[in-house]
Structure formats: structure tokens, C-alpha cells
Amino acid sequence: MSEYITHDTAEKSVGKVEKKFFTFAEPPNEMLLDSGAKLGPITLAYETYGTLNPDKSNVVLVLHALTGDSHAAGYYSDSDEKPGWWDNMIGPGKGVDTDKYFVVCSNVLGGCMGSTGPSSINPATGKPYGMDFPFVTIGDMVRAQKALMDHLGIEKILSMLGGSMGGMQVLQWCVQYPEMVRSATPLATTMRHSALAIAFNEVSRQAIVADPNWNQGDYYGKKNPDLGLSVARMIGHITYLSDEAMRRKFGRRLQDKEDFSYQFDVDFQVESYLRHQGAKFVERFDANSFLYITKAADYFDLTGFKNTSSAIRVFSMASARFMVVSFTSDWLYPTYQSREMVKAMKKSGLDVSFCEVEAEWGHDAFLMPNKRLTDLIRGFIDSVYQHDSE
Image 1: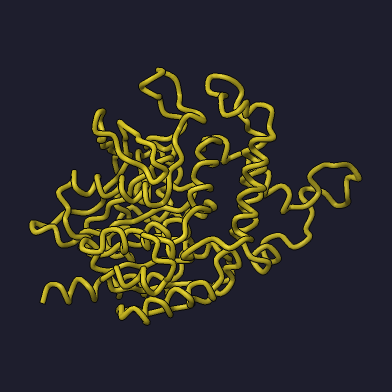
Image 2: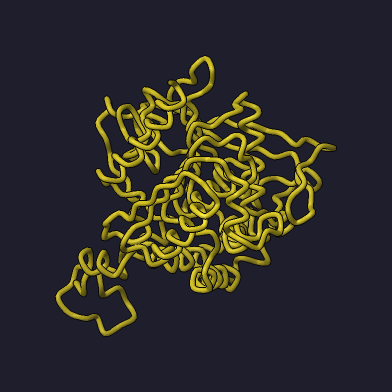
């Protein structure tokens, strides 16, 4: 997920927000993971926007993508230069209207933005987990989010939505806890990674482990594997854009020069952009978390949930009303994967609508301001809420 952020006027923002923390699975009641390992205690960082109504019927759960976090909207302070990663969608009068709905967003298990992950302190050693951190899956992330919902006293979720890996979590929620989910919007996502998506993730991981500073994951308090993580981000960032977006944004334009340097220097604007994205990323993200989270995304295969081996069978476990959204220029999770999902949903008897949104920005299109997408999401959530209120 790249960092397309739009500043909004103060009156349309949720304003100042606070990152909160919830800790559970204290020993000896650790959480059992899909790998068979146990983990605890577990802390999840989360944020909430809007007001929970008395009967707790207005909950919207937002799930973030690969390198996102709990800070989906608003500002932490007046000096913040940018709001949360989906501020254009979440707020008063926006697609997810915080005047009507109580929005929850948490950082995933395995993350590095306040939730327990490889950079967290292992209580058994007093040192960061590093590679001693157990493998986590999308199912484990959802299981941890369910514990947060229980903590907040929320038994029903009016609607949930997320793009990319956030969409995977949406799908997992709908089959893992079907009794809780009233409606769902998976955006720019898939039921399982293609070989191409796995390949890009593996090359990114190898960039990190090839950095001498990675040191088998034991780099905390030492030199970080910034070069490897930066290259990994550059690789990933290419997959988030489209050929058309890169052509329009950069073309073959040179960066602050009129001719080639005839050295291995930054000549093209696109080179400068990718290096800039890589440099920014290492300031905020942990390399080991990147390894673990990309592997969790690669392991995800909804069709194998509870050994069903069939998309139709797995969706027969769900009861939510769905709106599936894909984007014309997304070549990482192309529209055919969403259509495959919708076909299985319909065959399992679910109420599902589908929309392919015209967009030039590639996979990142779900993050970009788009009136049609905003209207789709607003209309879908409002229709479910109205139906439930009648």
C-alpha cells in the first residue's frame, strides 16, 4: 500500500484521535495460532471514530492493508502533516460516515505499529522476539480482532471493509465468525494469492534477508537492514501502480537534469520516486514484520478454510451481504479474481453485488479519492443500516 494521502478540511475530519491498546491472552491463557504455536500476552493497537449507539448496532470495522496500521483517519495532534491513511473515506459525511457509525480499526497481529509482532519484547527473554516470533496467519489476525470486539462489548458488526490484505481479513471474518457480520465490502482483493503475487513477495523478502544487517532477524539495537527493506518497498510499490499511472506520472522524464549522467545515478524521475518511497518506508516499518506479514498473505487461501477445498462450500458458511469491488487497472489482484469470488458467493446463495470501478491508479486505486467508490460504500452501508432499523 503506498501513501496517497489527501488533506481534508477540519470540519470534514474526525479531528484529533487517540491510539488505544488492548492486551489479552495473558499466560497461561495464550492464544492458539493456526501453526499450533501459542502466543501471549498479545497487545493490539486500535482507534475508534464516531459514537457507539446504545444498542451497538452501528459498528463498522475497517481492516488495513499490508503495511497499514490502526491510524485510518484523523490527526494525532495539530502538528501532524497528514491524517490517517483512509481519511478521504472515513469522517463526517464521508463514505463511512462517522456522524452515523462507530468505526474501529486495529493494527494487525504481527505488525509494528503498536500491536504485538517480531519487534515486541518476548516476556520469556526480555528481548525482542525477532525470528522467535511464531508464524501468524490471516486467520490469527482475525482471531485477535475478535478478542478486541469482545473487549469492546460488540456482538454484531454492521459492516466491515478493507482493501488488499484488508480484504482478505474481511473474507476471513465472514466465514470464521459468520454470526457477527451483517455486511462486508472486500476491495481490490483475492481469495488466494496467485503465483505472480507470491513471487513478488518472495523477491521482496529475499532483498531483506540478503542485507547483512538483517543478521538472521537479530538487528534490534544494532544497524537495521534499511537497504534490504528499502528495496523490498520499491519492489512492492511497483506492483501497486499501473503502467498507465506510471506513464502519466513519470514517463521517461529526467530528474533535475537535462541529460543522462552516464553513471549509476538517479537519472529518471521514477527512479527518484522509488528511492524516496523506500527511504520513507524504513523510517516507519520493521523489516521482520514485513517478512511475517507478507508470508501470512501468501499462506492465505480461503478455499482451504476448514478443509473445504471449494470456494462455494466455504462461502456457504457465510451469511453476510456482500459488495465486492475491483479496479480496472489493478494487475496485482485483477478483476477476474473478484469475479471468481462473486460467482462462488452467488452459487452459495449469498446476497452479493459487484462493481468494477474505472481507475487508472492500479492496485492503489482503493486508497485514492474516487467519488464513485465513496458513493458505492456510503450507499451500501446506509442500505444495510436502514434495513436493520426497519
